[in-house]
Image (cartoon, rainbow, N blue to C red; front, side):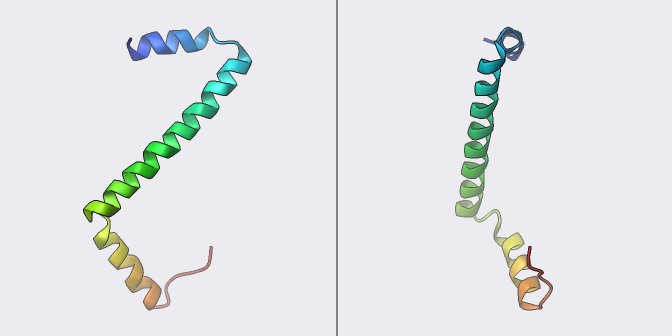
Length: 65
């Protein structure tokens, strides 16, 4: 099944099922993003960035959100 096939099928969904699909896709996207961040943290890809953040925090450059 191609992306175009999926897109065509989505256009045929009733509104309630489209809303259900959108909610599922948002949740799935968040899960994929969380896994990517986990993997990046475990592999050390974010170490330099986290080091910069730590230095800025220690220098008093951080602000509360």
